[in-house]
Length: 195
Image 1 (cartoon, one colour):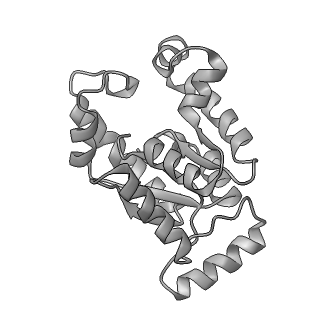
Image 2 (cartoon, rainbow, N blue to C red; image 1 turned 135 degrees about the vertical axis):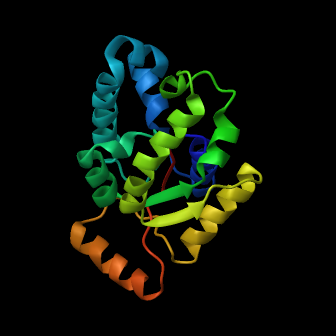
Image 3 (tube, rainbow, N blue to C red; image 1 turned 180 degrees about the vertical axis):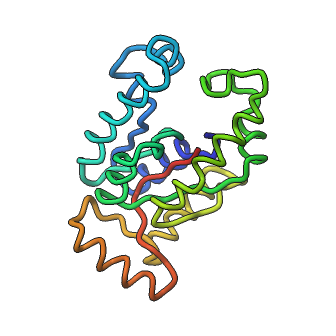
């Protein structure tokens, strides 16, 4: 939520010549209504059900760049899909940085509370360890231009700290992770996301 996953992911995909998907945008396109409306009508649980189905579909596709919604990591099944079917890049930002970026955005259903900053901090506290658990590569959320951030992601990919390969078998993934750990780098999916 606010780390730049969609903007950065879209540019990384463009530079790699790959299709880009954002789970929230995909849900809106398939439902024909904004995420906020889905939250109003079905609640968070209904939205998460839809998000899980979208993840099941999109993570089964090879050669894409995927930005997931902030809460996608809440469900263990979603984390497993991301971990096994691809390589995950976590755009890490502090709650203060995230608040600075989203404080004027009224399109975030989970922040429509009396104290949105406290809500964001509570979400971060729950989600951050889950992101760290599923991520193959952790990168700081970029404070400069989107182009510079995309360059940093691509540099990490080309430096061998991450692979741009599509979905892989678990044995292949384990081999890559073992090799990368020796170099103090881990495999990472061509997906960007954040809380």
